[in-house]
Length: 258
Image (cartoon, rainbow, N blue to C red):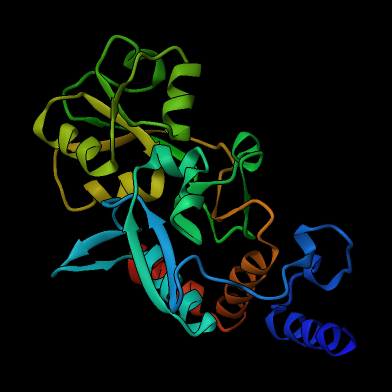
């Protein structure tokens, strides 16, 4: 028993990744996780709602994007192969991703309701909301959008915000369908995160940002509740990427210089 206790302490020290919460002792069952244990042996499995450019999308048969680069770095630190599962955002937002994935990385905004269903890493990006409209739509702000067709992605903060502001948005399953609806004229405008929608129209004439909404949103990696070792692993990687300037390099790579 004594040898087993020493072994468990050694494993804890090996898996600690600089998290303040991880350095504190606790008698709770959640804190008793000795080491990160992947849901599938030999793999670090990530749930992500694809496509959601430039965070995650398929190019030349491979999953690429800002979130995918971060996921690859976490897998590297865990010394595991990265395994990506394309999951609906509904399953991620509800916390059901925990049945098939170690974490969810999919431009997930940290909110109080979601924090009751899952834990979040330290934030890795600030991302407010934007309203983008087609030229000639007559939309100049939220008020003028109320009588128009506004597309949102289902189960997102964009959809929630649109409803709170009196819009009757049209929901789409993913961001790819949402932006395609704007480009094809199915909707007059779209409302959602600046990073994704700004990227979607940056090289396409005929569309413009008409209103920004400072919501203070921050993105984080979603971790199932009571998975302390998983959270420490993720936070450790994010700290390493931040300290080395790699996170800033990845931001520039996928979103351009600010």
